[in-house]
Length: 302
Image (cartoon, rainbow, N blue to C red; front, side, top):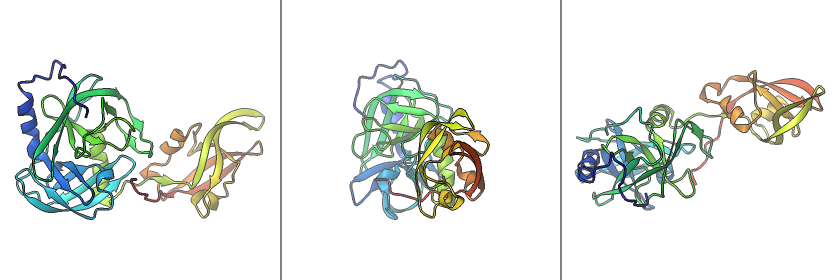
């Protein structure tokens, strides 16, 4: 984070060193072939970090709070939320204290704590630059709450825990979800994604195999909103079901889909492997199609 004066009333300069010290034992460093990153012990033997920092690193070195270098195993990554799970021999490492119900406001003081490959702790202090409700990342990941920092992240702080003025963790820092600002993945999002990563190595998302854009179309003489199909992947679920370029998807699973966001809501993990009913406008007429949703192919973080 870009350093800024500490002005929030909850941030007492005299207590900040103690707050950093409380969080530091749960912070690990990650020694990588390409640079370094940080992570936070989320539960016994489990570290959460940024997927963009550790993508494809099956084995890596974890630098613990006592300076020990231990082997870590990448258990899974979710490029859509830029989160990754690593397991390691935790020893005496304890999980960080988390502010599960935190709803930070614009201007609230926050700080990130990282650990360098040498074992040295580093911290960066700033404020929340933007806050809001649930949102989707540009990769399609569902995030429970928007927490955007007022600046970028220093090298080595990708995947670092971000805490409030008391030292309680409000989330994990990502440099990959905003062009100019660091983004904090809140505790609720980390908890949800971590369960999937430890169980499956990934977060499952539904896949139709189409490119589409919002449009207004005529359906049986009346104007309606839907998604115009611009391309259909060969052998994808949409192609197999008979969906054509130029079709307009009006509803999916009985719900209107006037936007890409609305369609994505119908393609959660629970839909993978299940049939999905589509209502389509073709040549001004309504037709029904049924397709079997498959899992979205895993692509890289970069």
